[in-house]
Structures are given as C-alpha cells and as structure tokens.
Amino acid sequence: MAAIKGLSQRRLNRIEHQSSNIQGELAIKFSNSGGTRDIDLGHVIANHINAGKDKALGAPDREIDFCVPTGNFGDIFAGHVARSMGLPIRRLIIATNVNDILVRTFKAGRHEMTGVTATSSPSMDIQISSNFERLVFELVGADAPAVTRLMAGLAQSGAYTLPVAALELLRRRFDAGCAGEAQTRAMIAKFHDQTAQLIDPHTAVALHVARSLESPSDNVPMVVLSTAHAAKFPEVVTAATGIHPALPAHMSGLMDLPADLVELANDLETVGAYIGAHTSANAGELS
Image 1 (cartoon, rainbow, N blue to C red):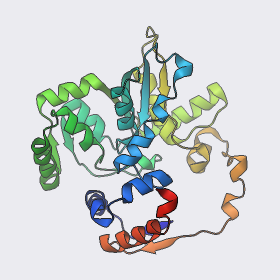
Image 2 (tube, rainbow, N blue to C red):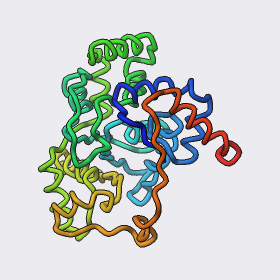
Image 3 (cartoon, one colour):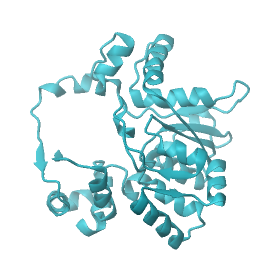
Image 4 (tube, rainbow, N blue to C red):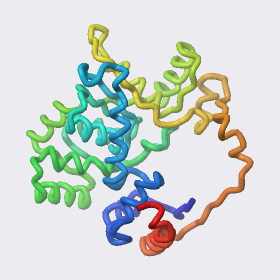
C-alpha cells in the first residue's frame, strides 16, 4: 500500500486527468487487479457486472430500482451502463452524505464545489465527482466541445451549469437524496433493531435515502447497495448500536499482521514512477 503525503483534491484531479501519461495500460491493469478507485473506465465497466445480479428479484421480466451510496459516481454510473445494455432497471437513485454536490446538481443543475465536510462515510467526502463527467458527455448528446467548455468552467471558477435539456434528461434517468450524520447514525441503529444486522455508514446513507424516496404503493423492488463491512467503521457502529462489529472470521487475525506501507511525495512523477514500476513487474499476471 502507498500513501501520498498531503493529497489534495486538486492533486487528485491532476492524477486522474493525467493518468494516461503515467502508463498507457495502467488503468486496465489496475482494474483487473481490483486495486483502484473508480477513476478509470476499466473499473467502472467491471463494476457493472455487480448490477446484473438481480435475477432472484424477477429480472429480466420485472423492473428493479437501485439506490447507490456514491461520491465519485463510479458504481452508479456502472448501473447506468448496465441499464443501457438492457438490464431492467427503472430508477437509479444517487445517495450521498452532506457532501452533496451530486444532489445539488440534480436539484438545481449547477455542479459547484463548496468544500468538503469530514463525515463517518469518508468515501463520499469529496468535492468533485470524477465519473460524473462521463454522464455529462451523454447528457449533452456526446458533444465533446460542450463537455470541454463545462470542465473548463469547473477548473476556472469551481462550477458549471448544465444546459436545460441535459438537466431534464438527468432527472428522467436518476433520482437523488442525501443523509446527514444524525440520520446516518439513526439508520444504523434502526436497521440493527429491525434485523439484528450491523451496517456501515455508507450503507446507512443509502438506506435512509431509499426509504425516504420509496412509495408504499410501489411494487417495484428496491435494491440498496451495501459497499463496506461494518467492521471497517467500528467507532461509528458501536456508538450507534452499542455493539462492536467483529471482523469476518477469515480476517480475524488481520490486525496482528505487519503493515506494508510506503509513503510517497505529493508529486505526480513520483507517484507515476512508483505505479509503473509495480505494475510492469506483474504485467503478464494482470493482462
């Protein structure tokens, strides 16, 4: 594992947008190894397979709704890809925490950075949803120059406004909602009271949003994606339920293992060289 000192949103954006300069086949190699964020299309495509595991709920003869906890728009974009390929998904619901740039975009059509608030669901603690740009390309009719202008506005002023037609299309294809910290903790506790199961904060965010948007008269099943084990967030889960979540049996000795961590300077060339060196050695295995 590699840690980058002082990694900021601006630096992360540079890594994402310049990753092709690091190594041409890097994104695909990483997605095959399962060791990357969803900033590369290979990871997104791999994720769409998970959205297809819905036969037990009646697919392909019955539509299904999916509520996805998301910050970077990767998993839910994978669901959008699956739906575009024919999976019978009726609604894709964006669920975020208080870092709600996606929900604000959905409601007002303005994609605007406003800072990041640290929460108990850190995977959603981001300013910019990198994969949303992929959807914007579709929303504007595959007009690449239009996307370039919007992204330039984001880089210059920290915001852009979707064209009216694009916003209308977004609202037809998706729904959206968010959950605050109190609502997240309450859902962790409520779900345990109802099911005796422990859930992590990201799953709790999605459950809160799903339940707030579901209709009692609606017969379409709602699938809520659970994206992490409760044991990854023991303090939050214990505070909400009074129960300390245990690691899965096969990982019971995890905390006793030595840590293998390399600290890298906050520099694109340094990070690129490290990634390139460690993927090239396994090129045959990963390809």
